[in-house]
Image (tube, rainbow, N blue to C red; front, side, top):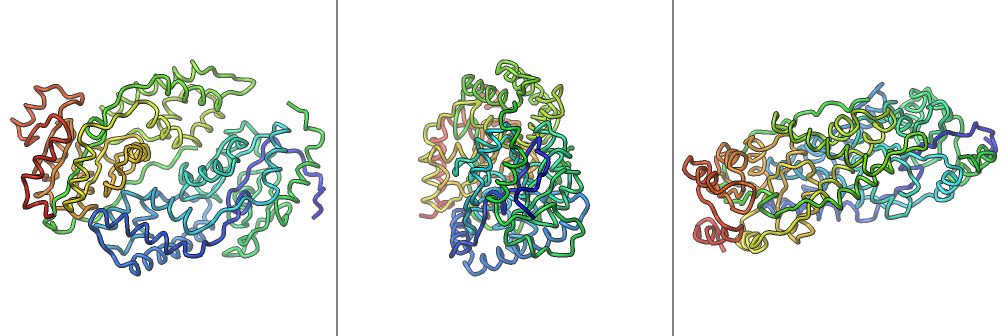
Length: 536
């Protein structure tokens, strides 16, 4: 079809990621590198699996996952698998319980690793020019992509200098539905305030992209040819309006259609509880389970950083018809955080990113603004988790974790948090990540302390015996209670957090704690006295 076909000018341009913005190709040695990184991660927690076994498991899981994705493309409104489902039911399904539990706790890390290591990503010719042309014509652009690691896609777009020209990024793993479910495209049109019938959608597959666009009543449906275009997994009834060899020809079509405009001015599926296998028999090994906030680091509010986030939020949500000031955005965040605190006191699960940003922050906002918040909820939660407080590493933590490593005692962080991703980033910034075998974070696990399940999962992840292990926390009613319920023998509370001294002492008297220390470093002396647990 001619590159000058007069398609109507779009109100918004919706682009797929792989096959449109980026081309992917298998990296030579990529799977081997990924397997090595997984083996290193497992070894930190005492799991030593042959590389061949890990490679077979990952490759079998990837093959099975591809079959699932092809089958899902036939469904009317498929949901996306959660990261834990992908890892637990596909990539690590046949691994022993301990390694499987550890990889479940690191699902996001594993999926990012596979996305960025096994394949190389290059920007397709013509995409930069297309984004610039859309920006010049004030036509907003959305990325709408099936992805198992939207976070890695965001990083790739930033690294290639493209993120600033994209109004909103919508990834299936972040919003819970995948193409050909039309809801993911409706979320994009809502976020951009555009009518579906006046939008262009550009993909590269028939079974996912074209079918999703037709079901969503997108006005113009186009493909840029990739290795997936001409080989759908099954016969597809719907067809695109045109297929172009690459984005350079699409650019010419876009320029022709918009020549006279260049100067113009759903709910996410409920959280599915993880089905986890029963613990294997105790292995007789000690581990250190450690809380994050108040134990690894202390925090103090950082109002300036939160104001900066509020300014960015105002920029995201503003439009000429409905401007929003940074002060108004800050008020929305502040009120939502108060509501979040009340909700967390009433239940044993975290407030999800979508619930916080869409239901609490966006309660009184427009459909468009709520759609934008839904698309960016995960990223906004991560940024809020990083920015709301300034973190200071507590005295002796580095020495404590180093001693554990040197004595063969694995460490697991067990944290109630709204962003496990932020907890990992903070620990990495403190130089601790290489000393930590596993992270069990409530937002990812689905339950929060004082539930024993999150502590039991941490024990399983590092192959440890609760009767020989230690828990270091600062809150009796959460850390002490969870550790007690999970059978942890040594339950130590540290001063310097938010718990008053009399409550710490009461925890010892009632048996929730076995000791109280002044600093995390003081626990090192206690550990060293238990020489039978710490072989050199």
